[in-house]
Picture 1: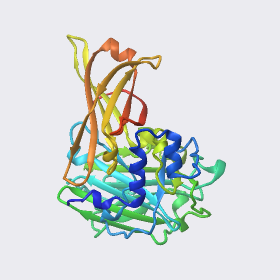
Picture 2 (picture 1 turned 90 degrees about the horizontal axis):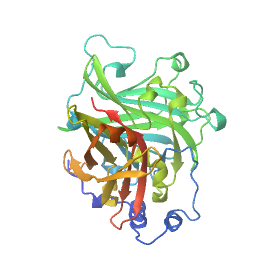
Picture 3 (picture 1 turned 60 degrees about the vertical axis):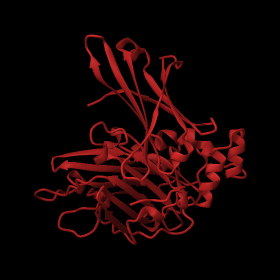
Length: 378
């Protein structure tokens, strides 16, 4: 499938690009162009969901998703199976529903081998949605109570034609009957695309509006076999394996994207992964790789990425330019920035954190991704 990128740029996105590329405008001026007067974002918001101008048709074809939609890269730093793991997950909203999208490079679509487990994502490709729409102090409580939901989207469930959704089998959800839900999947020779619509009416008492906060986690599950699966968390890390509402990321419902706030949402929008590998025992050196995932359609904004190594006191100990590269089928906009460097073990201990600075074609800093601790590759 080939996508004409320019033909998909909606008016909102065109405004977004124009503001982001202004060479001399201050950050406050950019925000004023997008939102007049500027709308302050709550400090706890880690991501946003943009409002749709009209409802989406749920048919598995993602070409009608606006380019201004908040979509994020997953598994763009996978060390061995990039063509079977990389994905793009997105979400949006309107007055009636929450919408999810998934584009996955995955030709090894796994369903169950043997008996079907109680929870399908124990041994099946798909998405898990965890949602908390409770208001005020109730948002983020660890219990699953009214206003919360946890369900699986299984596009390739054995013995079923078409995707299915299954509510998590805990006591709180035993009597839950979802209304108006729609789900569709389209398969390709490179993977598959999935769309999901969840009407807000299924979440008692929630009235969506610009400025509302919700708790959200979207988990991509990829299975190599019935006994092994890999999970990628859109808003968190492996700590979210507990799956309780207090581990969810806080998402702000907005009218449209504001590039002035990219520093606040950068760690989710541009996930940074750092790993150490190929350790040289004799020379006491390690190779380090840093990968920044770049969301679809946002590649127009990124002209340069530099990766900074920081000492324990926060000072910059080194800077490595990252190589911008595309991968996957043409037109699907899978992009990432990759930086590699070699350092001694002593330096690796001293330079304990890494950040990535994203720069526009005019030299303006778009975002500096929050530091992330290093992990050994495996």
